[in-house]
Amino acid sequence: MRKTTPTALSSTQPACSRRKFLKLSGLSAVGMGSMMFLAGCGPAAQETDDTAGSSDATAAAASFGEDGVLRVGMEAAYAPYNWQVSEESEYTIPIENVSGAYADGYDVQVAKRIAEEFDLDPVAVKLDFAGLIDALNNGQIDIICAGMSVDPERAASADFSNSYIDDDIVLITTDGSAYANATTFADLAGATVLGQAATMYDDVIDQIPDVTHMTPAETVPLVVENLSNGACDIITYSMLSVPKLIEQYPTFVEIPMEEKFEGSVMPDNAAIVKGSDTEIMDRINAVIDGIDHDERQEMWNACMDRQPA
Image (cartoon, rainbow, N blue to C red):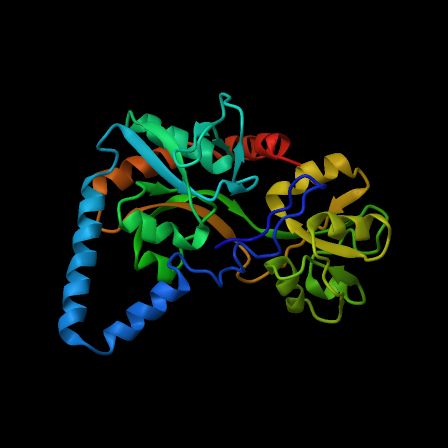
């Protein structure tokens, strides 16, 4: 499920929580509505459409990388997970449907390893996030690596891998704060807490009793600025991005919470066509499982350093 991830502090990420954790599904809203409507009426046409959809998915599953190319669906606009650049480098892959463009990001690094396992040449296919599962099932792409998390709705439409990185929401304050050594939500009573508008980073604050839930800031840099200038006591932040934040703001500290937010863990999973050969997913998972925790963090930090401002 998507979220807005803190990036370089000059960025202005869209105000959406890993797609509002998620209000956008892997299928477009119109597509979902149409399928629900058809399921309730028009039996003859419904059966024909279902059969065609099943055939498309079967054909897509059978064609995984069949031409020697692994087509990887992503937005190429969601740093540090994935973004578009104009110059090729050791970190990039070409964007097939955007002339002269390349994709970089954490998803890209994982996709490159998966492609290597299958001896395929990886290319990105730049698509709207909401249309990725449709594109997968109609054979436009072979795999999704796009900051997407498995959920029950998506799992009904695609097969998902093990997670290749897991983010969570943590609390940040300053080193001189009365809350710097808090371990439970009760310890935060009386604090002013700030998150980013229209994201999980704001939503989870309601799980903390007896705090002042401030009007959210529109961007991550504004959230950070408020803590830096003393306008709030605590901010919510991406666990994965804390090392880079503290590198830039040495007086910031992560609060050593033992009590955790509910429903805040955000995995990143690859997806292939539902019903694909189990050997394909087994090999994908073997690649993913071979990337240990330290290497994942190093890859993430490197992507944070390279991402566009």
